[in-house]
Length: 250
Ligand SMILES: [Zn+2]
Image 1 (tube, helix red, strand yellow):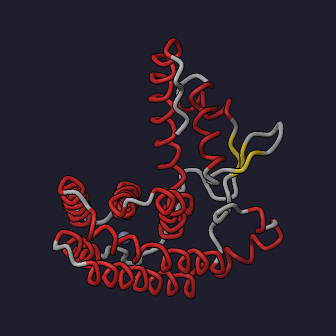
Image 2 (tube, rainbow, N blue to C red):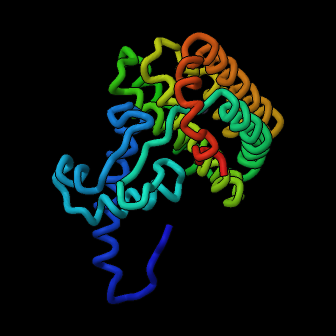
């Protein structure tokens, strides 16, 4: 969120910002859908050619992704896509979410505006529509972005921007959806979101906190099963690559 206050540059920056946003969204989608593979390298030059845009919006988007921990800059050699999240980091991430998100949901039930509630409802409806669309791979990214937006909106409705930013920096959904991409796991938990939504809409802080905690715990269990089944080799493959570098949690 680097807004410039200089009047003269505002227009150009905005337009440039919008292009960078589009490039960012496209790259994020490719990252989530594994079109750009975990552990692989990308260069500004190659991406600019591929996406048929100039280097500037690519550079802007990659700068942002680096700040967000979604790519790692290699001096003079472009960027590296972090490997898949390890089980240990996943568990750490869940721990942080359990501390912050039920509390945020509780606050949201007290403070959400009616427009925030209807925005939550709209996201919920969009996710139901996507879930009914056979759940094929192309909709995973779209689903993940809405799921992320749902959780972000709960944090926003709670009115604590520090908590919201802390949660955003985890990029939970990017990491989880990368894990999910090649699996047959049923990740759609519409009923759990519905409970969160109805508790917030019904101004019931206890129920909202409970529903959010319940959702995160059930989601944790689904992903644990996935780790048990499939991710063991991935974690071992990456073991010699310096996993301490993976900036999923900072
Ligand atoms: Zn969710």
